[in-house]
Image (cartoon, rainbow, N blue to C red; front, side, top):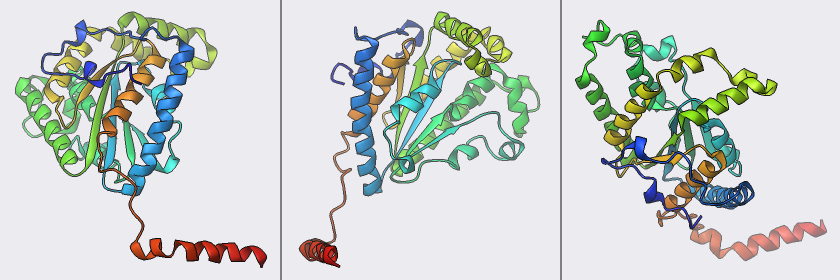
Amino acid sequence: MEYIRPNEFRATKETKISELPTLNDFGRDNKQLKKDLKKTRKELGDFQDVLYAHDKYSVLICLQGMDTAGKDSLVREVFKDFNVRGVEVYSFKVPTDKELDHNYLWRHYLVLPSKGKFGVFNRTHYENVLVTRVHPEYILNERIPGIHKVEDIDQQFWDTRFEQINDFERHLHQNGTIIFKFFLHLSKEEQRQRLLRRLALKEKHWKFSPGDLKERKLWDNYQACYQEAIVKTSKDHAPWFVIPADNKKAARVIVASILLQSLKKYKDIREPSLNADILANLDHYEKELQAEKGL
């Protein structure tokens, strides 16, 4: 959408997420936003077809946000017009024993999108500098040499993780993965309202967990961790975008528009040309198929 300018949402070293709005609907009502999304996601779906045929780039989309920020519904609505073979979605939960037997990035490497495909990480490798930072005791499960107790986990430990994540993303970029990272910026009050709706609506009960309330008490801790992670890992090759998320429909349009506008800048992504021999014989192939009509 022309009214959305990606750079207005892109994080820099000076970004302070506490000062950024959690609501921006651009003065458009739900009907208009729904129409805008429908148009944009159709164009994104068409682009994905070309990306698949071109077969040289992949696209990795990372979604982070507090509980109820709208990650699941955003994935459902933004990628609705994609060919199912062209997009893969992964949600990373508590690491399994097998995953803990490897380094913390291992499980993310395993499901990176192949060339020609979109990959969506619904919660991402950033959980390793967010949830584990709010709950550093979780780090002990990784059995890292030299880390025997929570007190061993200092600022240098986290700075090293930020460097490792930056190296990971730089490696992906250099090998043809186009990276987008979206933080769905939700207000604490809007989260409260969404949790109340989960309790009020029977069909939403399954989404509610008492743990949500426990984590909500750590809101300020999470915001501080997001602030540092975003500022230290938003790079030209792997930018963070802070998306106002209090209006779910507007957030979906913003994300879809940023993706489409950014990907259109890759002018080398285009459908491959037919082999010269095939191209020269198109008329022959058409006549052969047309001739079958009389059989």
